Picture 1: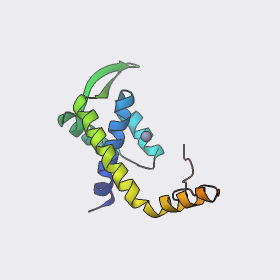
Picture 2: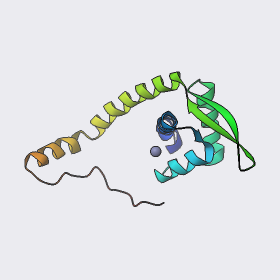
Picture 3: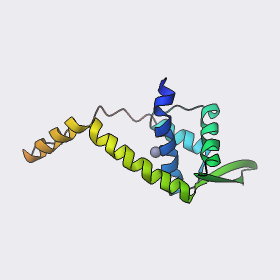
Length: 126
Ligand SMILES: [Zn+2]
């Protein structure tokens, strides 16, 4: 199992998260994911979007933007339910993955020390 398999659920949740806030489209979501360090090609992203639509989590329409057809996706009620479920799972996993850091952070706060950062912050590559 490769990196793509391991991260694909996170990518899908990320897409649902953004689609829950505003309509999304391929290039826009590719740029957004790129800012988070996910370098997806159109050949990877579009099947994911189509799959989310086929599963009923997204619905799409085509819009004419600057003379070109653009497929725009919005989240469905089923998508919002899946996002809510995903968020509880991510929250559970986050707490377990960062158990030590969270405990350490709480103790440091109690000692009025600056909070410890989670992992190394990657430089902004925008
Ligand atoms: Zn994002």
